[in-house]
Image (cartoon, rainbow, N blue to C red):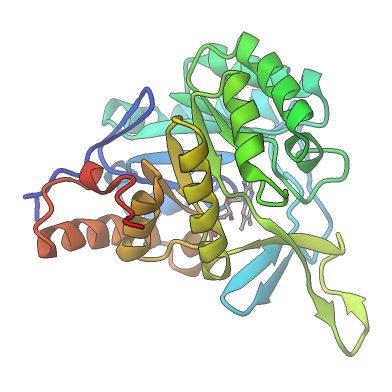
Length: 308
Ligand SMILES: Cc1cc2nc3c(=O)[nH]c(=O)nc-3n(C[C@H](O)[C@H](O)[C@H](O)COP(=O)(O)O)c2cc1C
């Protein structure tokens, strides 16, 4: 180990390796910090923050599906002020040790997106802001902003004006033409695109004839979505020159390699954290082992390397 170079650039962000843990599957990092030193990671993206504290949807909020889960958490979070006062300060040692910390922002209005982004940007506690305009689990929030190209342009433009740190825009897979959405997000000032968020689905209890989730529908994630995520990362990489954080179903180092080849500069680990708290570490190690086995000197060499 240690003979390969895992460092990558994700736009303006310099990462010690391409593996980041994803919003909503890693809390504010503290629970996972009991299992391993989080400084092993390239970065951590914390749970979505809104202007006010939110309890999220009533249970049941998670349903297991073959090779994945459906979730409808509904943006449960302590609110941006409490996160800035109590949660994000605990992650500053990580930043000093070279692991980036990214705030995930959600909202129910343009004003809420800009307010939360402004507070995070001014806090000095995050290296970047990820704009979650792709959450399928709240009525009137998230997804409503991420599925129409003009609305994407408007919300990203508004946030861009107040965001003084690098801006990541997280795209929804629940659209017909993801390349068009990506182009508009970039025109409006996105520094980095992240994709995919979850795919809207429905789980039914055959005996009760009712939906399993209280929200009726939820977002599908985990290994089941990886082929869709790879296809969309590839499409977006063809459409824009903006760096991509590829997300969706990664559970192994080889999965991370596939995302890099498809055109991602870094790879997100979400649901895998819920299956195995050490998943992200194992993915870093698996990626390193792949590079050693294949005699590839650096992870950066893989980016966009797909041969067609
Ligand atoms: C339980 C759960 C909660 C999530 N919460 C958020 C969130 O707050 N903000 C966000 O942008 N994405 C959220 N996501 C989406 C993930 O960050 C990720 O984009 C998606 O799950 C696909 O990656 P995966 O298959 O590796 O999980 C959540 C996903 C899960 C499973």
